[in-house]
Amino acid sequence: MNKQIVESLHAGFAEGNVPKVLGLMDEKIEWIEADGFPITGTYIGPQAVLEGVFMRLGEIGEGWSAVADQLIAEGDTVVALGKYAWKHKVTGKVCEVKMAHAWTLSGGKITRLQQHVDTAQVLELSA
Image (cartoon, rainbow, N blue to C red; front, side):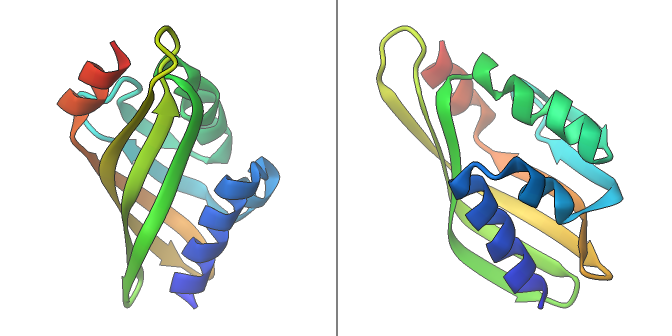
């Protein structure tokens, strides 16, 4: 079931369906962006994720996407392996980096995200 919830989350991302994505989150979700990422930090609650992450991704580039190529589930943890892609604001170049997300779920809701990404590569591509 947890794997299906994360699949639904990624489908919501692909559809641009923010209410669907936020609806899968626990009211006290802990969303952790990697140290060194342009919007690094820990965001608590869906509103903080919306304002602190989703609405700020434009600082990195345009047309932001997070695609999970593989999901690995065990117990209350689902790991998504995939890539981020965005378009550079100035050059228009499409940029891609590999990422891993460690999702924790409880009671049918996402309670935590830990982002893993090569932040140096993100910064280099976004400069």
